Length: 135
Image (cartoon, rainbow, N blue to C red; front, top):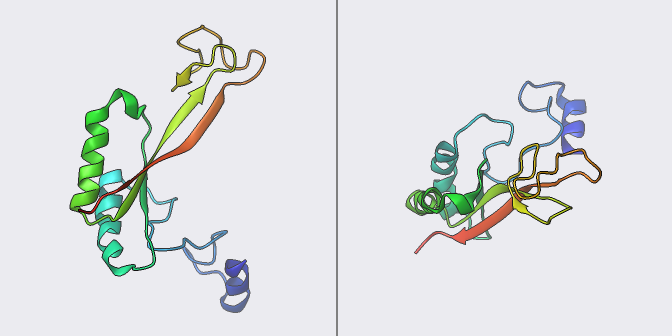
């Protein structure tokens, strides 16, 4: 809503009023191409300035249960960069036939069912694992 109002008042400003919405808080905008480490490093210092709550989150494309060491490194890096509360989003799929839960490509690794045969595989792409990183 606010972008539409501002565009009407100030015209089209590249990178500002040419978007559908404003990014709230101090988050790096979701459409920026940035590594998880750079996002954490950029947002971390702002946590100390927010006394009414803050969160930083990163997107991971793998199954975190298969790489606990990488998961721990991200959490520790959040802590080291001053992130007070962090979240890691990662994908989780579920096969509706055999109830396998994990990352599923085109074929379920448990029952061999192909995506698109009957009921589609459920694909959750924003499962957050939160942590308080300061201490």
